[in-house]
Amino acid sequence: MTATAGYPAQLKNGANIVAETKKLDLGFDIDQYDTTKMTGYGGSNWRTFIPGLAKATCKGDFSLDMTDTNGQLAFFNAISSGASFTLHCLTGVTATSSFDITAFVKNFSPSLDVSKENTVAIEFQPTGAVSFTP
Image (cartoon, rainbow, N blue to C red; front, side, top):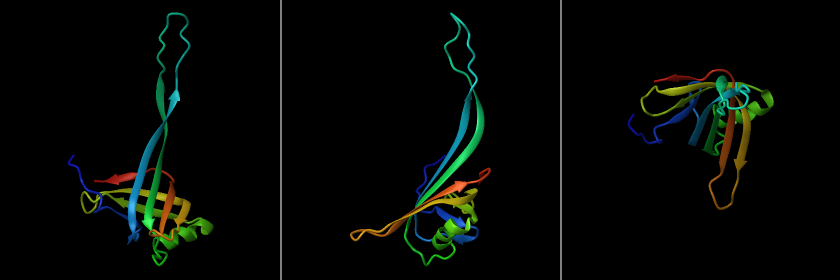
C-alpha cells in the first residue's frame, strides 16, 4: 500500500463532519488466552495461546469548538445523557474508505492555556464490532 498523508482524513458523527479534528488514534486488540499445559520434566517450555475477545479504542485531538453542535458539543452533552454515536473515521485514502464504529464518550478533556490554542481530547468507548469500508 502506498503511504498517504493524514490531512484528507476526517471524523464524522453520522453524516456530520466533526469540526477541528487534528488527530485520530484507533487501536484494535484481541485478548490472548493461555492454553499452556504442564508437560513434566523434559517437556516443551513454550507457551501456547488461542485468540479471545476483540476490542477497539478510539481517541481524538481537536481544536476546541463548542459551536460544533453535531460534533464536540454533542459529545460533551453525551456525558450526562449516555447517548451513543455512529462514528465514521474516514482515512482519506479514498472518498469512502473508513472505519465505522458505534461508541460512547468515555472521556472529554478540554485543555485551556493562555499561551496556546484551546484543545480538547475525546476518548470513545466502541461497543461491538468495528467495520472497514475500503
